[in-house]
Length: 533
Image (cartoon, rainbow, N blue to C red; front, side, top):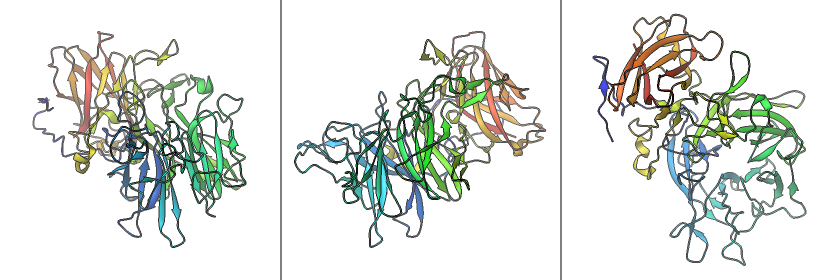
C-alpha cells in the first residue's frame, strides 16, 4: 500500500521503484527467504560454454516454522553477481493418492536443507541429483534427478517393496561429493557427524564392502574443538577435502554465550578423514569488540546458520544465512568474501568472513543509491542480548516480508517498491549500522545530506549519524537530526546535514544511534536511506 511521503528537502524528488539494491546483503530480494544456501558453479544449459552460479536451499515460506514444502533455485552469471534470477520451483513435496511424493496434488513433507551433486556421464552429458532433505518417516533418504541444474527434479529412489518409502542412507542435512575419480561420498547428521562412501549406481546407498562412519568429527556433546552440530557441506580445494558445518561454539568462547550461529571447517587428505579442525568461517552474531576490548554481539544475538564456500572468478566467498523478525523462520541469504589458502605444509587456512551490508559489492556501497533499511548488518537494542538465558528483542529488528507468488514479480525482483523490509521497534538506545559505504564520492562535500525515510510513532527523539563504531575508540559523528513528537505517523523523508567529511576517504561504516526520553517506546520505523550532494 502506498503512503503519502513528505519531502522535507525542496527540489529533491526520489523514485523508489526505479532504483535497486542488487548485489548487497542480503543478495537475494528481501522478500525471498532462502536459508541453508549451497552454492555451485554449474554449466549454463541455455548458454553452452558458459557457467552460472546456482543457490540451492530450503525455503522459509511457512512463516511460523522452519522451511517449506517446496524448494526453488536462484542463479546468476559469475560476471554479474548483483543480478540474481529466479529460476522457479525445482521440487515440490506433495503426496499423491498412492502415498508417494509427486509433483501434483495433496499435502507433502517439509523439505529441510538440501544439497545437489553433479555427475558427468561417459558421453560428457551432465546429470544432477537433488537431496531435498525430507524428514518424514520412510522418506528421509530421498533423492531426485534432473538433466538440468534448475530441474525439475524427479524422485529416483523409491523403494521396490514399499510405495511410501525411499531407499538409501543419507538423512538429515545431506551433502554429497563426487570426487575426480568418480567415487561418491555422502555426509549427514544432526548432533552426530555421519559419512559413507556411496554406490555411484544409486547415489544414495552404501558402496558394497564399505561401512558407515559414525562421529566422523566429534559433536558438541564431546570434549573436542570440532563441536559438530549440523549442516554438513563438502568441497575439494587443491587436493584437500574441506568439510564445512554448523559448529556449536563452546560456552564462554570469545567471551560469549554458546551458539550454533557459526560455520566452522575441518580439512583432510582423504574424503572420510581423519580431519584437522581449521577454525570459524562466519559468525552470524557479528562479533566485535568494545572500547575495553571486550567481545560484543552487534547483530542478531541468536539463530542458526548453514552454507558453504565457493570460488568465483578467483575470489572465494562464504554463503550463509541470517535471521530476521523475532524468530528463526524468515532467514535470508548472505555472502562474505574470504581468503582460502593451502599452505606448503598442508594446512588449509580460511579467513573468517565479516557480517556486512556489502554482499558482492566489496569496494563499499555506493552512497548515492537508495537502499532499504533492512540491508543493515548491525542492529542492537539498549539492553543485553540475553536475559535469564533468553534472547531479548528490546530494540530494533527487521520485519519480514513475503510474496506469495514469486513468478508474478520475478522480472522486477529488486524493485524497491516491493524489495522492502522495514527496521521496526527502534527504541531509545538502539543502534542500526551498515558496513561499509564507500565515502570517496562524499570526501570534502560541504552540502552533503543523508536522507532517512521513516515512519514516526509520535514520540520525540534524536538520530545521530556516525562514520565509525560509536561504542569504541573516538567515534566520528557526522550528523544529527531531531524527530518531533507531533510528526504524523506516515512515511516521511527527513534530511540530515552532514559535516566532517574531509577525511572520509574509502570505506567506512555508517551507524545511526537513537535517543528518546520515552525509554521503552519505539521512536520510528526506518524504511530507506540515501546520501545526496
